Image (cartoon, rainbow, N blue to C red; front, side, top):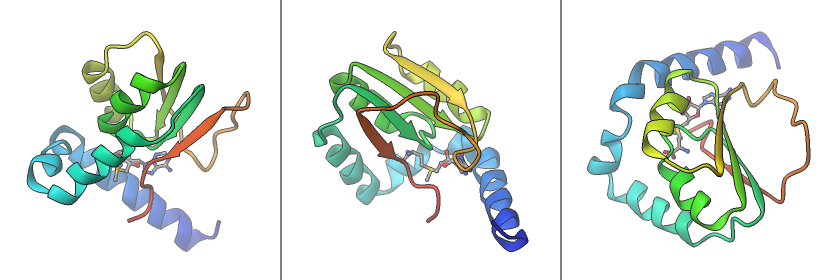
Length: 118
Ligand SMILES: C[S@@+](CC[C@H](N)C(=O)[O-])C[C@H]1O[C@@H](n2cnc3c(N)ncnc32)[C@H](O)[C@@H]1O
């Protein structure tokens, strides 16, 4: 990725880091996000699932209800901490990782993409 792309990604990550503590509020404010979460609940997230850009774990809970295991990653260190507090499941493992640099150590049955670029 070029310099422009790198700085855009860095700016985006800084934005989410700054908003981490209040991020869940968008779900109270936006009907479309609540509808999207309901759709995630209906997806066939089976087996060992990799969730990219898990944020505060709003989708992780729904995915974990169907999956054998969930590896949920996010680059913002604040996000997995908040998500962990929301998602009490021994089947979920949260990782802090940059999706563009991280090398998966294994194959997954399902990959659930979060929104990394809006
Ligand atoms: C729109 S939020 C989506 C969170 C969650 N999927 C949801 O819908 O509630 C985007 C997330 O992408 C994360 N993110 C941004 N850049 C990333 C990167 N390079 N690698 C991994 N996660 C990243 C942010 O920290 C943020 O939590």
